[in-house]
Image (tube, rainbow, N blue to C red):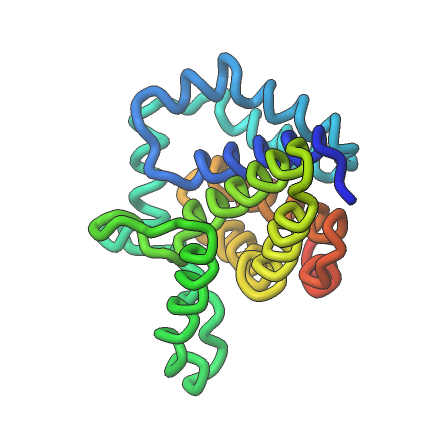
Length: 227
């Protein structure tokens, strides 16, 4: 069983990763430089992150040395948005459609993701990001880690904590762990500027380590791509 402090730090890392992949606002750069990257580093240290994960975080930190809020917003638009060329779609189904046959089940994939969300009281508001957006999937993992933390600290809720843990394993196996490596590879080749390439590296390194921590075979299937 994962200790409650570990779940607190895992939740924090997932929330931070989600923040990196949302459309950047004017305050993001300041918050990253002043506190959030230090908080992320501390959480990773408490989780026992390896030197490769810290190397990815160092790359992300270095990428901010000359960044401005305007340049970060431009890089996001040119990397992830259709108007900027959509160099790297931020949605799972764009990366997992390996064959024409798979493309036909895109609706099923989205329904399965939404089913995970509904099981834990989550509904993606119309007009916001799609359910398979990387930031939304990361926020869902954050929520599950928080729910497991709360259940584990409340007497008599061991079954609920176990349900949350199993959901995290399954979501990594069936969704987030299936495509985080592909997202990283695409960002390394196409991202405008170094920030999002570094964010993709940090994302995949953490997903692999967390899958191993949870005992999900998603880590086994993606580890070769990050060796």
